[in-house]
Length: 320
Length: 274
Image (cartoon, rainbow over all chains, first blue to last red; front, side, top):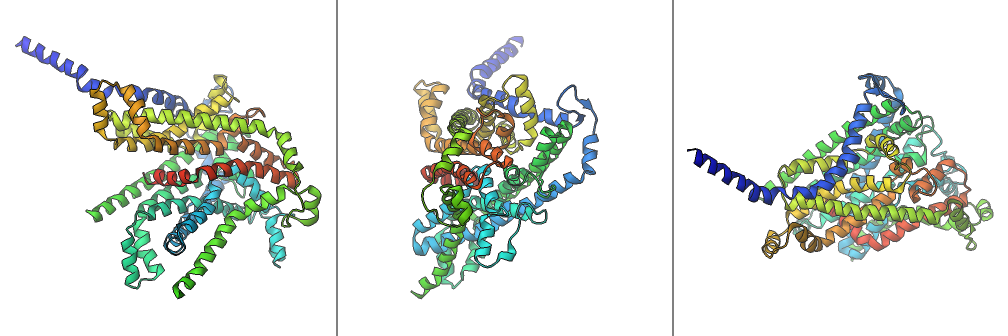
């Protein structure tokens, strides 16, 4: 009796050591450098940031526990609410508009230009639209703040040259229009990303679908609505998710174009937390702002991921 | 013929839209080679009368642009190489090793990639001061290696998950250990994907702004992006020099774009649809 139990145990140990365990788990070693690096650079700082958000800390000395005081203060902070309101504008400028325009442009490039004028034309045009995407955002900011300058700025010069001198503005210096100017720049920056993703997506659509629809007399708009849109739904969710996250995080453009001004008119959460950390040195408060931002971004990511997998499942269902 | 005629307006509209995207680059290039006198006399829209390169030269010397280029290349290059190595190691364990709980491990990497840098920036700044890495290029290299590797791990894991297992098993039977299988088989076979990642990591790191702005305060360590962004904030420059600065900032990105156009557009599609 004891002998059999003993033998079974030995066999089990041997199996665990030499067999499945050895074969499966020793790959864990390959994960070790990555795990340690992530611990040091992501996990620990993130937990510290969350911890600090519950304290009163100015970056020196010991943080004092203050519970939810920072978060309660945020609720009454009009600057904080304004920065998140501006975030919604950024989502429009960096996610909604580029996705919608990118869809139409991609379909036009693929369906019209690619087919009737050759793929070279389509590729060159695509490259033009994508170009701003490879530019450092700081450089894009310099280019645009000079173009939008009130005196001698190219935009104002163009307006007066075509007889619309009365439309001239201090594009970035007027609190009433600065946010819209920044939005315009961000559309320019962002447009190439959805366009390129959608054009790649359109390549896997069966061309027979389009040919059949054209034979049936469906115009461009109907083909766009009934073939293009449903076929590249997975890409649409990915693009919307990515761009929304990028919009919530936008920092460099605001820093270079307006520094959140004039009078906070273009302040966004990431710039708000940056100034709270490093200019006002209210570290606990800044940590609370960035924690709220993190929660929102993770929520958006999860929703995006959910929509994407559901779209993919639906698509597979149709295929099967 | 008539249908072709009807299509021209669409083409023309698209060409105009594309032109609108490129025009800012053209205006910058045109004004970077004007003298300040010419600029103030004729405004930003006139064509340059001659080639005036002193603005570019002055700006180059004033910010020590050569040093900034070296810093950017050094940082972005190291990050790209190291992050690809780290991604490969992680993805080897997840995609091919199929370690236990890999879904959770993968979810962790995705989360790490989604995390806004704002939620890391102060602790990273504080910790790097504690360990004496503040205001060193190494600090930025370490942080971005990890951040880029989060995306690389996510992408490569699914690519390696579909790696033909017969090849690996054959190599194992021939006596290769895991380390040899990784470097002699998995890495060479996955080279196209690794190339895409390398290009992306390089350009993403090159364009980063927030963390380098916080971490690299001394002039000798700054990257191109930070140097230009900070200068812009100070508004010390005249229009010609601003354009010279913008042109010098655009050029590396432009060269990179022209060289890697295919990789970039292909890669962005691979990354997005995965």
